[in-house]
Structures are given as structure tokens and as C-alpha cells.
Length: 306
Image 1 (cartoon, rainbow, N blue to C red):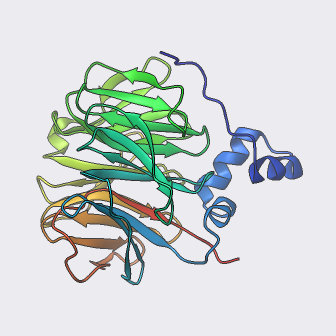
Image 2: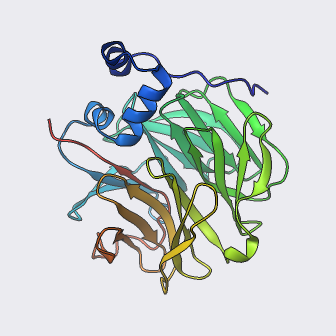
């Protein structure tokens, strides 16, 4: 197991930007990524935002615009697609395939599907743009894994203190791993280099958390809880806990538009994608017609107009 310091990506537009500004490489990369300005234009550059989501019932990956226009992009060889993430460097989507025990990726339009890893019941997946690393939660063993974006140099980071790890995210400024454990019905975290697992908040704060995402700019963690039907958030230190919405049916996957301050999540009972605007505190439906009764993975890809 390699628990040494992570290496910061030093190629492409960020190297050029760093030379021009004279900023520290890691700080420069971190700022650009979490601010969502230069990197998003580099990654997409089409002037359109998309919400990617998985559909396990019909075994497909889809995306929808913010206006609710749905487009199927992957519909073969998926089995049971679960969580999904995005690599801004190579402009590929990554997902876990539970049925076939695979970690896979494709271009953002769904072309050129590749299998990267074969692991036992992979569920959560997260790509760290700053350190160019892919994190996977493996429920079959259970354990937390980390690899290069092409699946090479696979390291096992966590093997104890967990039961059924699912959705996963990383605080990219500290390397601290946060993940939902559906077996323990809690959110856990582990800090490098030892990655000792600890409870993030008191177990009584949760009923059945299902998914989480991190606002890297404001250092807030958002999660859905299907047990109590809530969308909630807390700061990265576990303080300033706030329930944003309650009375939801079966909320699951959650993602965030950091620029517009909008939270999106999937609802497994309604079969819809919902949103909550943090500015005006209004909520609603992105997709107003049921497309499936079982989509759980979701990722918001932000783009800027050229």
C-alpha cells in the first residue's frame, strides 16, 4: 500500500497558467478547479451545463440539460451502473458497474467505453482533479481504493472500520476521504496518511444516509438521507449542521453546481431529478416526467461559454 504524498498534475493548461502567474503549483491548481472557471471551459467549452445520471433499471447512463432535455449516451454492457464522476483532464465520465464488478469510463458523449478495474461490488467513485487520482469504494470486501485515472497503480487505503461503503468524496485540499457507509447508516471519514476511519458526526444525526458531495469552495458537505427524507449540509469540520429540505420521499445521489449554488439529487421513489436553490431557497423538478424508478448516481458538469 502506497500512502505517500500525492503528486499534483503538472501538465496541460494549468502548467501554462502557473508559469504566467508565478503561483504555487498546488494552490494554483486547487483554485482553478474549485473556482470552476478555466478548467470547466477546457473540459467542455460548449456553453452548456449537463447533469449526468445512472439508470440501473434500464441499464443506461443519461444526461440532461438544466432545461430537462434528456439524452441517452451509454446503453450497452452496463449491467447495474451505480455512481458516476468526471475527469476534467481527459474529459471522460467514470462509473461503477455493480452487476459486472467493473469500474469503467467513456468520453463525455458515451463513446469509447473502457474497463479499467475489476473489483468486488464497486459502488462509490470520485475523481480528484488536483492530484489526478480516482477513488473507489468497494462494498464486496469492503475497502476503499485509489488508482491513477487509467486504473493503474491501484492502492488499498482502507480495509477496516467499514461495513458497506457507498458514495464517496474527497476534500481535495487535505486529502481527507468522506464516504457513506450504508451498513453503519452513517457518514465516515479518514485522514491521510494513516486513513484511520472515524465517525464524521454522531450516528444519531443520520437515519439512512445515501449519498454525499463536497462544496470545495465553501468547504461544506451535502448529503441525502432516505431514512428521514432529508437534504442536509454541514461544514467540513462537522459544525453548523442544517437541514435544507425535509419530507422528501427517497432521495439518493446528490451533486452541486458551485457557481449557481444549486443542489441536485435523484429521487428513487419519484424517479425524478430534483433541485434546491441555496440562494432563494426554492426547490423543484429538473425532469418532470418519470424516466426510471432507480437512478442513483448523479454528477453536475459545469461549462462556460467561450
